[in-house]
Length: 189
Image 1 (spheres, rainbow, N blue to C red):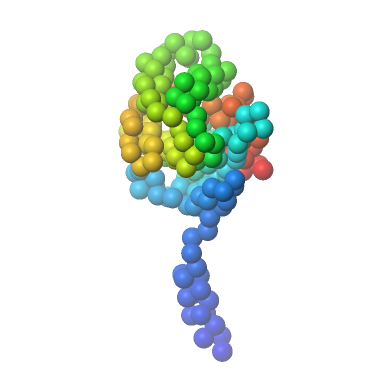
Image 2 (image 1 turned 180 degrees about the vertical axis):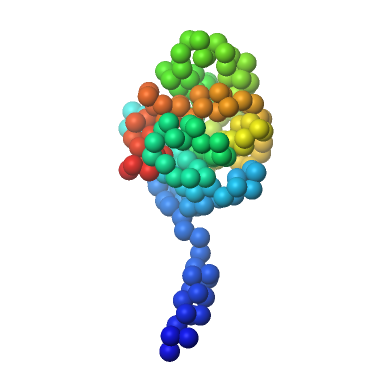
């Protein structure tokens, strides 16, 4: 009897679909393959809210799960931040205001000055509204930089590990865009 049980269990394990998580009507996979073919796992996901309005679901994928921000920032591996918009429309101007606020709250004036060209290039990638159903993907690949895609269309690549960390700190820094979103992305909620 055990000889039949083992193959049956193996079949069930192999036949079961990939796990997924759902939040605010957005479903995301538990694992993905990064731009450099590295397997990344869903570290956590959360909802970005502003004045009680749901804006987007933010998901963080890492090579190694962690709830420690310093550990995440020091990981030399690829990562992905996925933003799935659930609000009807966020204009480019409002997106830029949010990015600017996130960088300025989490970086010193000296760091902002050092990253001025990279941040400016990043801002230049946002010339369209984010509409309900739009998906932005921020992929970091060591030695290749941070890419931004919207609905599977590459918008651009920004080089530098310092920029990568400054960008991550918008969500995970000491002054995150949304504290509940930070907890969710860190897998603490």
